[in-house]
Amino acid sequence: MNAHLPVMLSEVIAGLAPRDGAFYVDGTFGGGGYARAILETADCRVLGIDRDPDAIARGQVLVERFAGRLSLSLGEFSQMDTLAGPSDGVVLDLGVSSFQFDTPARGFSFRADGPLDMRMSLAGATAADFVNSADHSSLASVIARLGEEKNARRIASAIIAGRPVTTTAQLAEIVSRAQGPAALRHAIHPATRTFQALRIHVNDELGELERGLEAALGLLKPMGRLAVVSFHSLEDRIVKQFFTRNSDTSPLGSRHLPQRSRSQASLHLITSRPQTPSPAEIAANPRARSAKLRIAEKLAA
Image (tube, rainbow, N blue to C red; front, top):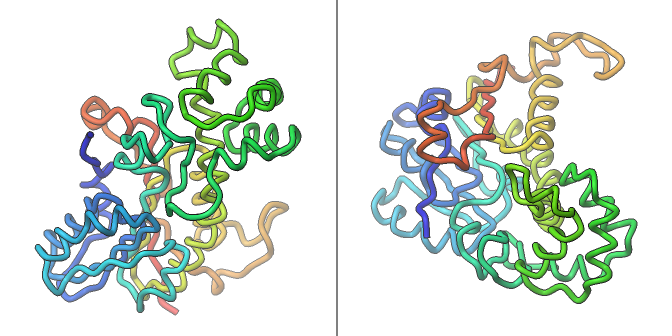
């Protein structure tokens, strides 16, 4: 199994600018890479939050290493305003972790066969539950909207014809056949977008992101910073719109945004455009290639 490599780590730490005596929230603890780097940069405290109990269990090694400075909470990052007090900085690394992706039993990847699960929290309905019970319209809608898959209706028909679908390999084979031979010549696997769509749906990732951004904004102290790493356009669009809507550089009014005054702004954009990984980082960690980092600072009241 590959170790989890935190994406754009140096850029995230530079953006958060950890300082002694401060308190930070790593809302997507995962392998603990960002939390560890924050703690190594300054004599501060960090709360790590993750909905995956496996991540919390792995993180106990770091809790012991940084005795009294790192604590972990099992939960969704949208709950951070109830799990933590006022914070000097929040980091969110969106999407699936390498630990989840590389563990066949978790069912996130078609690269190794496993149960069609995809639950980050290990609770609730699985991807198999959804694909085996959804009607054609619902299945096609999720694949099209959350996977941005143009052949969604054809794929949905193939899945329904192949039910019950219980493993990742079975689903990948069904989707690949539905895509046709031409899809095999593309750079990405024919089932990539369908797997992404089902994972986002099962974990309500976009809803969680919207709620989490609001929670982070409420939690941040004045001059506290929010750093968000996203990995696909649906995530980045939500982050961009949230930052713009709440920033001191947004239009005072437009047909896309509600009328507002400068005094209502809550954020100052540290990154006017998203930062992306360097070619060297992409070469060392290909999963970083689609990442985008946006950072904003909470304005004084």
